[in-house]
View 1 (cartoon, rainbow, N blue to C red):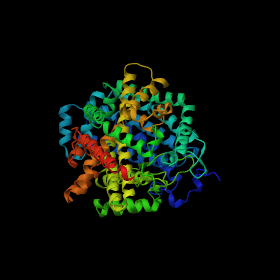
View 2 (cartoon, rainbow, N blue to C red):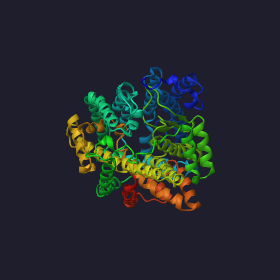
View 3 (tube, rainbow, N blue to C red):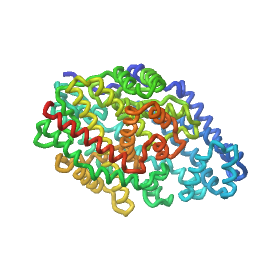
View 4 (cartoon, rainbow, N blue to C red):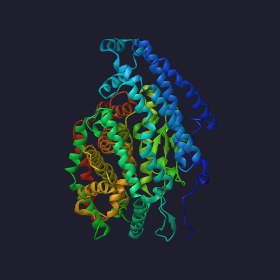
Length: 603
């Protein structure tokens, strides 16, 4: 049988690629803006030492900085999107690196602004905040002033800014190795076809009905990480040490405190999440036991946890049908939402399919002056692809509404709330699909199975990731070495806790901690778990409530970064300072598992 290989970029039809012309019509236009921003950088010198003079002077300095930042966002967005099309493309890797370098230089030049604003005496600042010249800048300034205990003198801030590019080294090394250099070989699928194994199709192989295919894919995939384990462990270890350096130099009590500070999220929210999930592992164990029983296995391994336990459903959905289904599922959010989304998904927002060298996974990315682009590695043969599409569409529509309703200064929203918008979309899709297939017993069970697996992956699994991050950062803070054995040992212990005796833990699975890109963004993953908890509450409000609930949710999407994330969720009707949303989400999961157990006899 002919080998099915991952296509090169030039083999993908242009209609399936994103349209970056709203950013720049060509690379020469990018170069022009690059030169313009380089020349504009000298303008910072005129403001140094003057910010205390008047509210008007302060406003002009802020406006200049925002104008530069807006241009930099546009420059960087284009460069990173182009580079992600093919991580081996040296031209666009060069553009990306130049963009990062210019961003670092701009950060150096503007680094005086925070310390200068914080040095303005309290009486003058109180007067400035009442001045009409700064009428729309109050929250922006309050955030800077809140950061005063963790801001260093201007000269030191400039030195720290100069190190920004170096600080990205662990993440960049891992990214290049993971996306451009690693190869996983080929395996035979259920039909005897030789197919290249990749990041994009790994989950598809794990969903195969053939246990031999699943097992082969799992061990072959991790064989590549095993070959690079020392290098990746070094990158991850130094990423943690980078976090430790910045937390200490900025006088935070811990890496976690430093990471949570900008969102104004108390550490109690993090601890409450870990405690609530730890206390509610029983439904997860019951589900894994059900999975083993329905699949007829003597032992359950990790590679048995993705295949649908409803065996007779052969799911397939083209990208075009998936986009239409997403629009239909989100009709409850109103005509404006669905009209904009339909246009975006069909024309220019989405880079749809995998190609050789393309960044793995999926994301939504853009800037104030561009569409909210979506990178996909869409596959027709897995239901996960449509869920990924509607997830990223949630981010993109969040960006659309925030950019439309907020000025540039407040358009950017926190990741903490971003995961709420994306996950809420997934929950609305599940509701829609259950209604669509209400008369199909097997398809209904298949969708329920997928919903359970998604919550398991998002609430339980991401919380386990969050506990791993907490553990390795705490170890670094205690001065303990973060060797390969230490990293794998910490992760292996958590695998035992979170899967109990319900699953056999293959030694290769401890390598999973080396392949999670989000670990290079400290204390990011917990937001998936809090996000799905808030999303469950909000999706139920949208589906079961009235027009006011829908409007409150759309208002939430329009807030951008104009408030702290917990305050934005409060306005939407969810109190994440309380453990109640997480507890309710775990109860929701328990209900789904019980429903699945009750129907197991008919599967």
